[in-house]
Image (tube, rainbow, N blue to C red; front, side, top):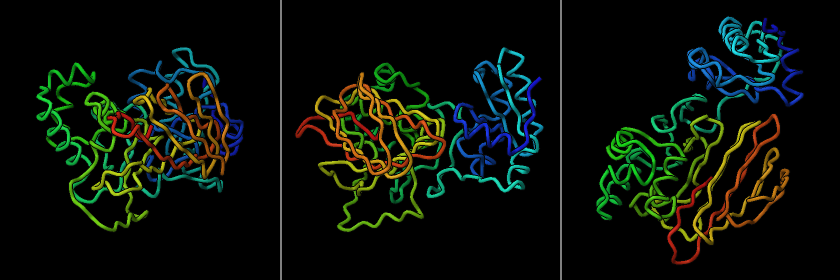
Length: 324
């Protein structure tokens, strides 16, 4: 039988740092406020395949404790160990005076759930782009690249591993792709990441208001990237603001040979894996490294990690790099 814990007991479990906190409410509920370090996996998704979240020490939470208990029972039934459910849910959590987080409050976009399909997730994320929104911009750039190269949708499907239906939806501006999808497209065409998210409008001076910022968001909603340069330009270097939620990991495949990343941590902590090496970075620490090897951003802490990244490429060489 799953263990039902009071909010303060749940808070103590989270503070230990070795429990997976899963909020089983709907994404719209989760974005309005959730437990720190939690990730969103709606109850229907858990019940459909409880083995996906079967692991050691899982803490489930919902609005009042009913849905979380159902999820906990389902996961325990397939072999989950040390499964907990928060008594009274987020309502009791707030009543106990415990903190609630919003999902990337500076963003006006909606974050998808943990198990949303990364190929079909539609997000309101435009990386600070002026209108038209990111979905239309990427779609138009994809169409131009494909037509210029003489590549059919079927051929692009084979190159990227993405479905033909998704590629068609992106090209028509009906789906805003995630960071990983844009990265796959850039890699297939051997162009910089910015080539797919840039507009053709030229603006001499740009003010990118933080209050209206929109971001590319990972499929699980725990990693986001915001461009901090005018996407109507083609800068020699790309500048990004990155957010990585607590107890999260974002993997990146090797970028084009010669690609360099200059990264500074401004909030929280980061374990950066570059090839076989691992670097522990705290707020204020910076690192410059070659990004043409597998690398990963890992947040081992409970709170969010914020970073700023400058991406540079070999002069005159095409790159498939992006902000992850």
